[in-house]
Length: 150
Image (cartoon, rainbow, N blue to C red):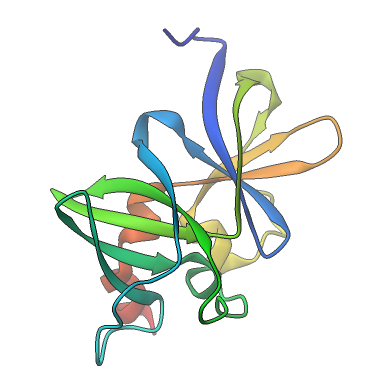
């Protein structure tokens, strides 16, 4: 059970940056090396895959964060999440640990955070030697809103 003065996150690395996903949004973590591309899909949709009988849309988090895309044929870690009754897999470079962070370490998005990143972030945590950007899973997966904004 989570203490009110702390929150738990699954930590991931994408393009050398530390991100946190609220543990209550994460269904599973797995390693993937193949998925099926979807013709004419938005660039951040890497493809789809069958994971334990569920069709999962794989989201290239490098592209979603406006970073260089993932390399074809490399193994990646996938964070399984659910959004509006559909299953998604967030393709990340590495999965770290489950981190308990004290609420007093949290800050709102800083003014100098890239505006696009700020639109999908729910704040930052000041850790001992780095900053962790907390991703808002709903905003990350709201791909249609990005398309409307473009």
